Image (cartoon, rainbow, N blue to C red; front, side):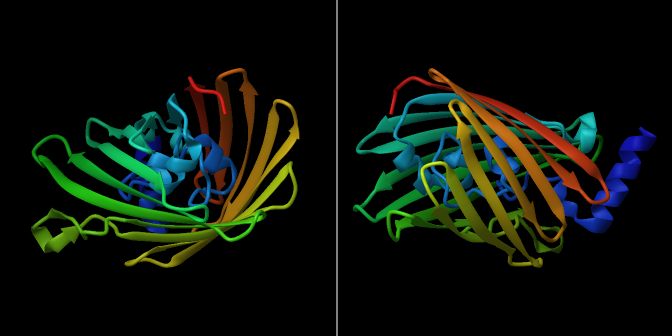
Length: 274
């Protein structure tokens, strides 16, 4: 318990949102291994990061991931996701959970992504976020909207943008407390068939901007190697992915300069082949 309280104190002092999945941007192991970059990526987890990416994923798939945040069980985060091609687009259902009995967050969301033209895709998502504070503090909840777009600039460059909490949802009347509204924009550069380089900027409207840089290197079949960094706070990341038939296994870890490591793993089963 002392260890947990120490971690929480450090986290509140340095960056309170490191602990919270509020903001809907809880990580998946692929994104985490690339420095928490995601806005221009198209994969199973696009429903959690940028629903516009679901349209390019275009597969029925099931996935689960788990993060041991700062190696403290009370700060663990986990998520489940399903994507299904429907109505000339792809629908994604996601469920996530963070925390323990004294403080926990649970989120369920439904997303839809659609290709609008050869260059553009768009996605929307609706979430319900509940926060449970334990003991006599009760619980709170809010409905949260998201919108995302992707643009193919050329064969090499792909642009993504996403806004979380477009409706500025209020979580509590006390001091007019609202769920964070987060804006992200990023650019991906497909250097060649094996190397993807990405840069992303993230801005909580009530906090400093973050800059992220990451790479995904398809070193050999079936292995991918990933690395990245981001600012505010300073975090370095690395990870790998393995694809075997219809299974995708990902592992990553982030290292915070003060709070240490946050390992994460995930497994995806894709029913449809590309």
